[in-house]
Amino acid sequence: MSGTKRAVISVSNKQGAAELGKALTEAGWEILSTGGTAKALRDEGVPITDVSDYTGQPEILGGRVKTLHPKLLGGILARLPDQADEMAANGIEAIDLVAVNFYPFRETVARQGVTPAEAVEQIDIGGPTMVRASAKNHGRLTVLVDPGDYPTVIAHISRGEDVPDEFRRRLARKAFDYVSAYDAAIHTYLAGLEEDGGAGDELFPESFPLDLERIQVLRYGENPHQRAAFYCAGGGNGLSVADAEILGGKELSYNNLLDLGSASELIADLKGTACAILKHTNPCGVGLADTPAEAYRRALACDPVSAFGSIIGYNCRVDAAAAEAMRDLFVEAVIAPDFDEEALAIFRKKKNLRILRLPGLASELRSGLDLRAIPGGILVQEPDWMSAEEFDWKVVTPRAPSPEEEKSLRIAWTVARHVKSNAIVLADQSGTLGIGVGQMNRVDSSRIAAERAVLPLEGCALGSDAFFPFRDGVDEAAKCGVKAIAQPGGSKRDEEVIEAAVEHGIAMVFTGRRHFRH
Image 1 (tube, helix red, strand yellow):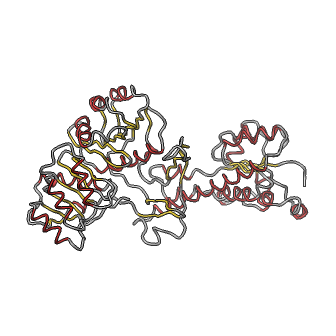
Image 2 (cartoon, rainbow, N blue to C red):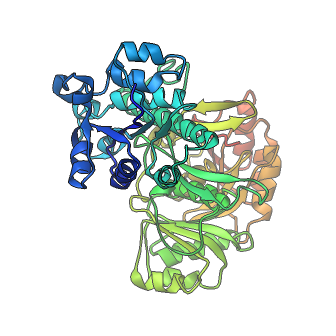
Image 3 (cartoon, rainbow, N blue to C red):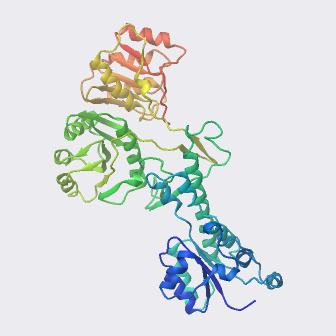
């Protein structure tokens, strides 16, 4: 074997590749490369040996097979000096550095109109093989998948130093992360081609690859002593806060992102011009009106105390009147599909107010599976989306809701899905009146919803995220003037609950679907 050090550079993302190639050349290394990378490096004056010349095997099958060769992989995987004789007998030289990143599969499938055949051609085979082999043998060689790591390696090589063992180990871990994420992106794409979205074991395979890309390292997590980061799910899983354009304000926090996610889901469910105010992921007010400013004032009227330090979401373009209406309230963030320039000028006077524009926010959101961590595992379920069939509800009392009551019920039932259980929402045609959140029994949630109300409740509607197990919840609702109730039904005591509604002159409908939110 020769004493010359050797590197393979084969990259789709060519950022920093020329600088790496020049540094290696100046240090006396031989560089092996393929296709577009070889051309790009030569154009920068970096001398290159084509992999096909090095292996003696030309590229075949239209370029599908370029680097899958024992001379290349053997040079990467060989243990030295133990296997030096075997390498020499087979004409294999040692490879000391591999800089590879893969075909742009994620970027390809993110484009509109990409066919499965086009996507498959962007599944890299040779690149992941070389990276896995290099990461496995990181005790001897350096593997680079991130151009951000090139400068550190260049600095060591330029000084005539070996890349430190600890740093090589870190690079190997990053390489396996990169391969895993790439494979997960392919899995996510192929799973998305299932016409019915998969069912049973197909929806929940024995192993579950996660396609996540880090967007931001956060200042801290839910509390200052917790470290945290924000990752975006790949695979085109629908509209995400990660897609929002930040137009002003401080850096987003962990808690901001939680609340913004909840606000986005709620706003997307509301019809007409709507505003939602949220705190700790729970709605504390929802308003619907002819203008954004009126919708905001109506949402604020539900619980003006809790709105301090909240997140506010709109499903419409925010104008100057709405921004002016919000002037005196301390708000952490505001998110909407768009903003007038005049509104932005008003908002930007509050230097800490985070302003997020997310086009498409007014449309119905759809995403992939819902994941939640528990100690030692992850629970996976389909998202709890609302169904149009829920509003073809079954009237179970002699009196059906009036058209006005039905509109109020739709608002109460829609908002109840977004409230932590046990959830009770009181509403009229313009928005929420009182919200009972997170109590261990439904009666207490009913009481709290009524007690927190600022606006008159007489004639209002009530939405309950789950059935009433006893009639006491209905009795409590009647005390504050509720005249219509929407609930899933399904209790052993449904007849008793219906009887209570009849006694109080309340119209009751069963939706047939529960919306627990833990």
